[in-house]
Length: 284
Image (tube, rainbow, N blue to C red; front, side):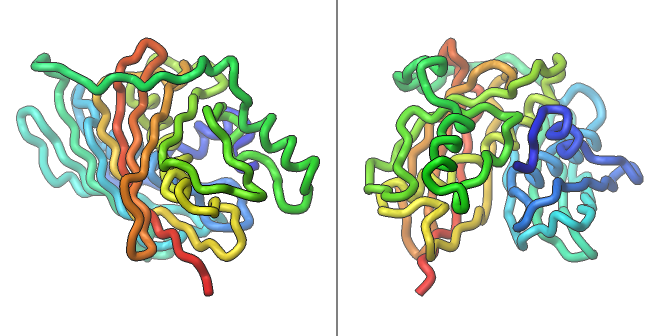
């Protein structure tokens, strides 16, 4: 359990300003590498804080370069590539001990009216009818307490529509849906909700690429890691309200899986889209 409550999660997603374009961040203690969604969210936060005016982030394209060490501080170097009349671009490099572990480009735009259309929200059961991750993991711990611990971030509630048997996964269609929300009320700050959404977005993409195969991220012999990540912020969203994350994986090849996602409000509004390529390698 790395992010047990919202106060701690928000503290880790914040970055401390050292200079105008230089920030630092920390991580909770974990026995393994830093969770990718954390670095993604922290880097977005650094980019947001380097932009003047009322511009809002509309897209983010990132690469995970090296595993992050949770025992070491992260330094975020922001490059103000462009400040135009409508758009601004920031490049952020996250480093530990001077070595890059992650980089991203974030584009910002002033809010502007224009043509609109969106994909339709898929049919999904109401979140209240579904099991939470905490309830699901409690059942697993009763059956195998040594293998299964606690959810990564209890501060974020996730309710998966159709769950797999982690002990004996059977191949299924590479589509999955889950309801997400922050369990505490979050202030009315669109940029902060974007940061939290970025954190949420890295939870399920990789797993979607394993759905057509008899493996999960917990299977013995599986080596998995996020390689890149993209987010498009279409409309403002409140992450303390339920958001449906609809995922699919159209391809896996070359030990890489490709996944896509869409976040919808309960009212059916498409607020963000995601895409990710991940390493899914079977160790010999």
